[in-house]
Each structure stands twice: as C-alpha cells, then as structure tokens.
Length: 422
Image (cartoon, rainbow, N blue to C red):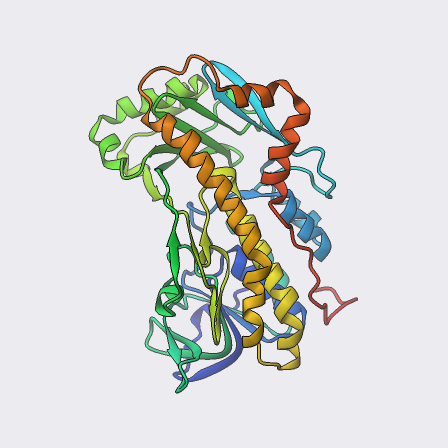
C-alpha cells in the first residue's frame, strides 16, 4: 500500500480546518497520530519533507519502546526492520574493552536495543496509522507559524505555501528546532552541551562484522559506532564549536585519529575522501518549562531536546506521545475541549524528562567534557567503569535507566477499532 497516496500533492485550502493537527513526522508525531486515530480521533499529521530519509535520525529503539509496539500488536513487524540488536553496551578505554550496561534482565518482550533506520520505522508507523479512517498524513507540508483567534488561543498553523490549517488542537512535534514552540512563545530553559558531533559513514570491515556496536575513548577524542548493517554510522565527538578546528587539519590527520581509536577501521577510512562527507551536528540539551498554551501542546524534542548520550531521544519522545494519548484521546474522541487537560500531559512526563536530562548532563559534565579537554593519555579506565565491568549485577542499573527510562508509559488510550486489524 502506498501510505502517502496522492497526499504529497494536496493543495492546502486557505482556511482548511481539522480536528487535531500534528506537526512533524518524527517518532513523537507519528506515534501521536497513530494512537489518536486508533481512539477514533480525526487527526492530520504534516511533514515538511517528501519522505522520511534523513541520515541524522537516530537508529536506536529501546526496550521501553519495543514493549509499546508489543502492546499495539506489531512488534514482530518492527523487529523485521532490525539491522542488529544490542544486549550489552561496551566501551573501549586505554586498550581495555569494558561492559557497562546489560539489558538482558529486563522483564519486557524484547530486552535489547534494536538497531534500525528510523525512516523504516516511520514508514511502518505511517502504514499502520493509515489503516484507521480518521488518520491523514500529508508530506511536503511545512508549518512556519501559528494562527490565533480573537482571544489569543492557538487556532492552527500557517504554511510555507501561504495557506493555513486551523485545528481544535495543534500538537507541536516538529523537533529540537521547533518553529511552533518559538512562534507560541513557550519558555525555553537551555541546559547546555559541551560537545558537537561529526557525523559520517564507514564501511564495516570484516574484523568488526559481528554486529558489535560500541564507543571508544582516548584523551581529547570519543567515537561512537552505530551499526547499520553493511556500514557504520560514526559519531566523532568534538568540543562545542570545535568542528572548524578539526576541519582546519588535514583529512588524513582526522582519518589517523579514527584508526587510533578503533584500529579495525583502518581498511575503511581511506574511503573517506572529502570533508564534504563529514557533517556537523550541533548537540542541544534543553527543555520547555511550560509545554502548552490554549490550543497547542509540545511533545518530543519540541518540548525537550535530549543529548545523544544513551540514544534515548526517540524513546523519550514516543513516551510523550503515549502519555498524551492516555490523557487526551478519549476526551478528544468525545469532542471535549482539551485545553484544561494539556497541563496534565506535562505533569505526567516532567519528572521522567528532568531526571533523564540530569543524568545526561552529569555524564556530559563529569565524563565527556573532561575527556574532550584532556591532553594527557588515559592510562587506565576510571574506577566506576572498572567496577561496572567487574560486577555484572551492577550493569543492570544503567541497563534499566537506558533501556526503560524513568516512569515508562503503558498504552491506556482507547482502541475504538478493537478486533479490527489496522
């Protein structure tokens, strides 16, 4: 089935009106659209691009999110997209490979991190959501601002093509550079991040062709390898704003630095022929102190940009969508005014988000920043890392935090089509 159909070519009428409008076709937006449609709400999701293919999307689907797909009845379909999975997290430091987190003990249907291209997952969610009669997905439809009524309530969005869509409720799921949260003047607290990421691909050499995904650390350098089947998506961490300094050196020096971290990559780095193949991703860690105003609710990265530490961003965003649906889906299906309930969504998720961001900031400040600033060689892994590696039972703690987060959600929103396949 072509989930997009002819919707990518729809001409938006100047004053079109929908019930619920979700901006952004990322994990939070697609899960929100699916769960609302499943509850019998008429919902339109808009995505500014023509497809979901973006290299900068995350690839890690954690046990907490896999458990939600099991609840929805299509975990098997999700796992067919998998390029590999991670049962434990390892890190190379000072010529030692340390195991730091273990997911295998988690009491969930899939106790591991599944690695899959996010665009494949989004396509699957779109197909599933399209099975509900109230769901609509419009590609190449970009929101550039909000509209308000005479009372100052958010009444919808302005579009890049000059049109507008009015909605009873707008859900801003348009990412960490959210246009809607800025347009709605929601208050933002910036927590800061000491690093940015250089993002590039390397063919997976035979020496690492076992599905292993890990990080490697040395003084002033950190490299994370994300397994995408026949190649690694590589994340090379640099000090905040330090991308230009790295690029001022020769590409050969950069390639040597990669091999110093992971010698097995030596056969692959020669394929990195130009700095044009290395993209810079600016890392953010921030959150809205208020996620809502009448007519609008922000969720996912639009409400709180997560650091890449732990790869938890997708999963926290999906948890937001579940909490939103648990609270709002039934009232919206009845036609009730959702405005008095919007603060309940933030209240349901606030503690979890704040705790996760505190953990990430602690790791940034105590681990990543000192490593990136360090010039002296690392002779021995830090004691906490050696302790985790030496005591398998302790690895369950970071495994639980990374794999499940804090206060993991369960789907409690109604299924108006129970017994009918979506």
